[in-house]
Amino acid sequence: MAFQQGLSGLNSSSHALDVISNNVANASTVGFKAGNTIFADIYASALTGATSSIQVGIGAKVAAVYQSFTEGPLTTTNNPLDVAINGNGFFVVRRNDGTTAYTRNGQLDINMEGYIITPTREQVLGYRADDSGFISTSGGTIEPLFVPRNEIAPKATTRFDIKAANLSADDALPSVAPFDPTNVDSYNYTTSETVFDSLGGQHSLSLYFERASINPSQWNVHAVLDGDAATQQVLGASPTLSFDGYGKLSPPPGALNYTVGPLANGAANLNIDIDLDKVTQFGSPFSITDKIQDGYTSGQIAGLVISTDGIIQGRYTNGQTKNLGQIALATFRSDQGLISLGDNLWAESPESGPAIVGRPSTGLNGVISAGQVEESNVDLTNELVKMIIQQRNYQANAQSIRTQDQLLQTLVNLR
Image (cartoon, rainbow, N blue to C red):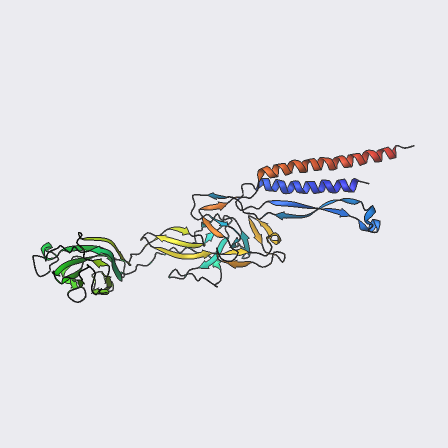
């Protein structure tokens, strides 16, 4: 009787339609991976003694439902915390019950405690940075990634470098001596830079260039803090700078120390090394085109940036950046062995093998695309075609049962 075969066909087609319907329902689910129904035939070898020439199958069954772990298209969002994996790997998350799960859904957020979480409130795991922002490039344990709410501490200026500057070789000696920062006729040029003390207080450090001789060409450089003549110091030995006939320093003076204190706000004494080794003396006008100092005031976190290697960097209101942590990724020997948990989550199993956890862009792991999410990899056109095919299969199996019923009815009606 063909009832068994037809019934198995109905069940198989119905199961396949369930999988297709689930794919269609999740066509817009971020990080979703489409399922594919795998069929197998059924033979009852015990009934025939396993003689292949007379074996008749007794139907079909669903052997497995595999998920397609091909990468879905990436869509740009307006959320800098949204991340997508370009390549292999899964984000590692800690569920609310303390277990570990894995996901491709990178729609991330920060909860009130400062932890980076998924839409279903799981904590995203990774490698945390230390207080200085250092993240080890190897080893380390993964833990929930955290964005601290405390402000970044100030850093006192310790270096002030003039990267590109020229003192005009055509200048005459100042008409007034000795040097007086309040008298513009006692020096040739001046430049100022904002520097910071140990409490984050801002100060104006002014350098005054005073030509000391024409031939040989020598200059004195005076440093004054906040326009206070009491803080005036000649940098290095007098003269501070000596130039040869080609407009080059001969010799370069190296780091010139300027120390001043105590400061009125109670901060530690300023101790700044000033580098003038890139200063030249050509016939062109005076110019300073590049200078830099290394201090800053305190700052509050203003935003986050995530790099392609998964490093989460905080941007602060004082213009500084600091590494806060690095997203971890996990790969498996067999993605098909993963157990689907719902909520875009998978769990490892003996069939998948243990998770191999590492950093993005290392080993088999892909890279991180910030400001993007990975859409579902469901191909709606393909799913609708498969739906039509399974509908026809279902109808055909129903017809097989109807035909068998008619044959049986004919036998019953024999007299």
